[in-house]
Length: 267
Image (cartoon, rainbow, N blue to C red; front, side, top):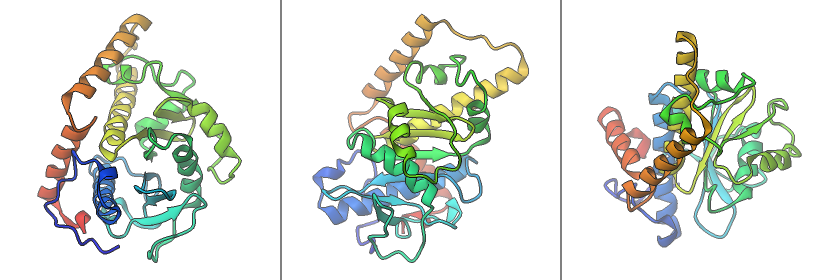
């Protein structure tokens, strides 16, 4: 796609649905490319695997996904691939996409178009470790309480190659915006790239803390009442911190950090 909008156009605090389609897609591409670079920056990659996808504003069910075969630090706004819900390339990209990633993400995108505009799925060491234990994520940190009573689980069925797994994924996700794919990895969703990324950061952080704390001693698991209150307080804080949207302040700060290192993701 021709990235013809100015480089200084704000990438946060923007209602993409209010913009002309081409401009909205161009901004969304930059937002998603930034998220890929941030996953790489934080060391959350597993070779070329995992996916962050975003639904393109407009009436058609199109979404952006990474070019399969590229490292996350090679993803740019212009080389993201636009596909439909059947996994067909509907843009001009020369790159293929990962079929397994399409199966997982298209299922979630179809579930609730407003809440799941963006889907992020990673294979991190800590995330996969917590997904591999029967207890799952425990309320042992402030970060983990953000998901208390709001975290779904989906049993492992293999590397997500079968389309009929979609229905089971949706049933297990329910009304939540975060899921532990058992023996596999973690998944978060959001109405914006910023929201989904903040949720991913918190879930990954919660998994890291649980793994580290478990190796250091006996886990101090919070009671249900405290964990519920803490989670509700975190939700209220996130909703109040930015008039533009959940995660916008954090994502804007992270974009500034990215730009100090490399701006190639913008193109």
